[in-house]
Amino acid sequence: MSTAERVLADSGLFTRRTARRDLADATEQVETSKATLDERTICAGPFLTQRTALEHEYRDLRDHVRHGRWILRSLDNLHDRLDTAQHTVTALNTWNHWASGHNVTIEDLSAAVDLLHESARSDHAALAAPIEAWARQRGLRVAISPEPVVIRVEVPTLEL
Image (tube, rainbow, N blue to C red; front, top):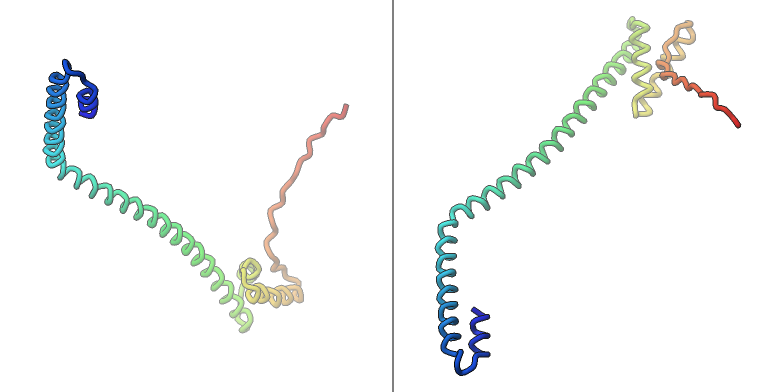
């Protein structure tokens, strides 16, 4: 339409009538196109609304999945912490039985010493020392299980 208006403005005496007719045709086409667009927009309205709702639902589901993964990781961490806590309680109970004078097997004492040394709490780790001193006095061995030994093999090289 703007092209037809420009042509009309630049037209001379002989081409003005044709330019006006072209401008009228262009104006009619624009109005017809606008009416068609409005009609199709109204028809597409429910679909556009549904698309928007589905986009929101998709974003919500994606957020729930992200939060769900975070919760699962947290639960895994809690499971590990619970497992460690249960082992620590067992070690502390073994230590308490030993300190109270009950019969405790050397294997249980060794496991308790290992767990108490691995504890992040210094007061738990300190409880292992009396068991170790008691065992040394009696010639028993309740030590921390040895760390795995890594054997390194050096490959001979040729020097030139």
